Image (cartoon, rainbow, N blue to C red; front, top):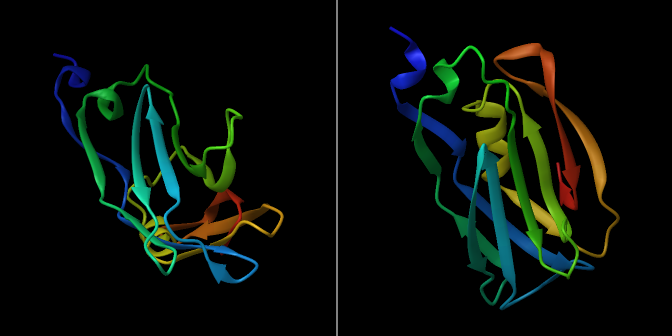
Length: 143
């Protein structure tokens, strides 16, 4: 009948590997939060090690949303440090409307270098699978 009743695997985020820095120096024992929103919000946390490194496993959910022609929600990926504000100290923020399993995103998320002493910037990164489109990424991570 309708495809949106059939649930399938949907990649909310590829694995994330990053390093948290402050003026180029590692920041140890600090909580990093990842929030993934696609209808529902999925949050997890990591603590930086002695060298400021943090990781998150891939996040995959079962959902019928991609098959639903009436669904037009974007996937939001947000990695941040809590500081009492809703957005926190933004390390990585992007809204994905297509190519959620993109090699471009996988490659970027596999090697984040985030310096909280630097002002967050906005980057437009071409999507490898569709170069006429791009991801807009905002944050304190070097891209």
